Amino acid sequence: MLNKFPALFFKTTLSIAALIILFSCGNEKPAKLSEQSLIPMPVSVTASEGSFEITENTDIYVPQGSGEVQKIGQYLADKLNPSTGLGVEVKTTASAPAAGNIYLNLTEADTTLSDEGYELDISVDGVTLTAHQPAGLFRGIQTLRQALPADIEKTEKQSGSWKIPTGTIRDSPTYAYRGAMLDVARHFFSVEDVKRYIDLIAAYKMNVMHLHLSDDQGWRIEIKSWPKLTSYGGTTQVGGNGGGFYTQEQYKDLVQYAQDRYITIIPEIDMPGHTNAALASYPELNCNEKDPNPKLYEGIEVGFSTLCTSNETTYKFVDDVVRELAAITPGPYIHVGGDESHVTAIEDYIPFVNRVQDIVQSHGKRMIGWDEVTNASLKPTSVAQYWAKAEYAQSAAKQGAKVIMSPAKYAYLDMQYDSTSKFGLHWAAYIEMDSSYNWEPSTMVPGVTKDDILGVEAPIWSETIADMDALEYMAFPRLPGLAEIGWSPKSVRDWEGYRTRLGKHGKRMEAMGIGYYPSKQIEWVK
Image: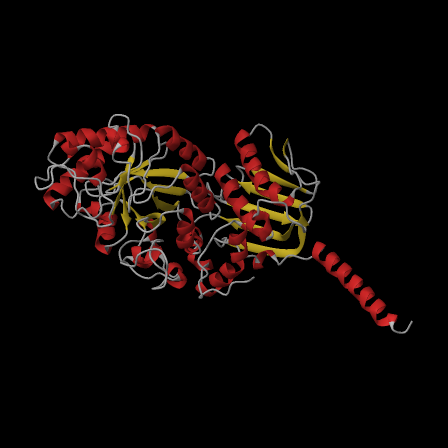
């Protein structure tokens, strides 16, 4: 009998311990709202004591008669239900719902909220998300996601409770334009790949997807009046092994998918350089007597191709391409490239850009070009994208044009983290986490102030990036920090605070299925 006592005591102790663990897990108190790893950092976070729990009785309520808000509510439900298994439904209401629910509401009373601003109020009785415009509700949902446990991002049912710490967040963006660029020309990415990237940038409140649709290595968008651009020019990529293109119907599907996430698609057709795929498809666009019939190109050199700027056929080509793109692009911009046109004489380049700018405007769009386009005479409606030379950004500001800040040595996501990186290049810099985060758009270029800046964009060029695994490894975890630079005021941004938040945020990226680079500069919380 005495020999049985230790075993019985041990079993009883284990059972009690298991019950304590089970009970404590189900009632675990979440960190305060001000301690959540929110990225981008909101303008204002006021935490209180307590939490709201999403249960099987929780639903999402939206105002009657607003189909757009109902659609946003369904987006939130679709984010909550796979992991919680709670079957949250979207319902309409004429007034604030009963306790225990989530309420998405539009208001005209709060004029301090911008078009993308929101107020998120979390009490023990429920969640109220208020915005001036639907886009603000969508941005606020991204914050609500991050206030929940990281497992909310998983696509299979998870155990545990779904508690949100109480408090109030008021938030709005610093810059109107917060973008990511994806180069689908060097390596082609499928429609589903692009949608995946759209979803990822949406999670960090970005609102622009810039698609680099043409380059020396491939032409990726169907142009019905010039069909060989894709039937021939779209058949290869860097290293060969395929290629591809989007039909106009597929492109329109991408545009709609992005619009549903309050993201604007900006198509780029690079010109007059980076045009070998077009020249190989239509040699009449080429006036290089040394190479009158260029072949398709699978390398990664730049600056060797140019459209024939003295040929009227070239301008018919540009007009047709812009016309067809403008018809299927509801956003206000067409990007015309203009970079690294090394074999285009400057006396030919300037009138070409001026004329292309007029063509873009004739189709109801505004021109964006890489910073070299400031050699031409920019209209105040045009935009220069700063990537290399400060004097070009300064020239844009002096001409009254807006500037997008994409400094290659800080914002190019295809730059290697360090010399051991398995993807990417390093011609601009090695860009570790601190370098990527520690820059301020409004003070980067002397003479280019916040008022001159339209926003911030993080490009990723795909010379060495052939699939989504490589893309996500290079984009993350740098992209969230660049999104924060575009969204959050500099008064709430600092490197030490950010690296702490990012360290906690790693679990969320893992739950989202992102294969990110585990930078040693970050203390990742497991």
